[in-house]
Length: 165
Image (cartoon, rainbow, N blue to C red; front, top):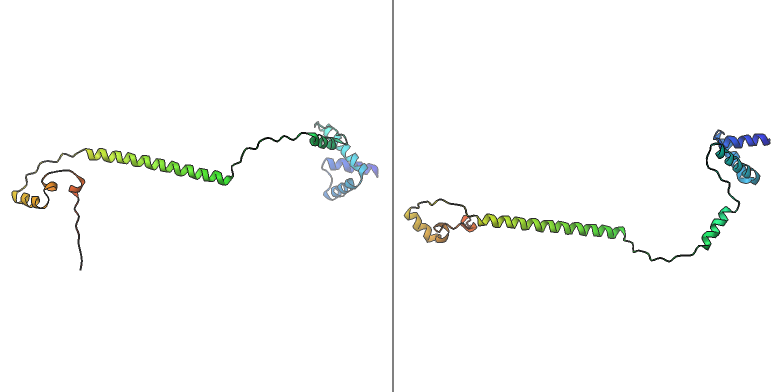
C-alpha cells in the first residue's frame, strides 16, 4: 500500500496521474501531515533531478520574515501631491485651447499684414477720356469717387436701397 502511495505521489509530480486520482491524492495530502511532508520532499527531489534551484526552507521561515518586517522602523517621508486624471485632462484641454488661440491670433495678424501690403499697392489705371456731358453728370453725383480716380474700396462699392410697398 505504501509503495503504491509513493508511486502515486511521483506520478502526481510528473503530471502523469489521472485527474480523478490526482484530486483524491491532493485531498489526502491536505489532511495527512506525514503525507504532506513526504510530498514536499518529493518535490525537492524532483526539482534537484530537473536541475532547478531548490532550497529547503526552515519550518519557521515565514515567521522569521514576518518578525523582521514588524521590527523594521517606519519612515514618514513627505508624500508628493498626486494629480488626478481629471486634473490632467483639464490641463490638457486648457493647453490645447491656449495653443489654438495663439495660432488663430498669429494667423489673423499675418492676414492683416498681407491685407495692408495689398492695400498699399495702388494699381495703375489707365487714364480714360470721359465725355464732357458724362463728366458733368458724374461730378454732380460724386466728384471724389468717379473723377478723382482714387482707389479706395468705397470706389468699387455702391449701396442701393429698395422699398416695396
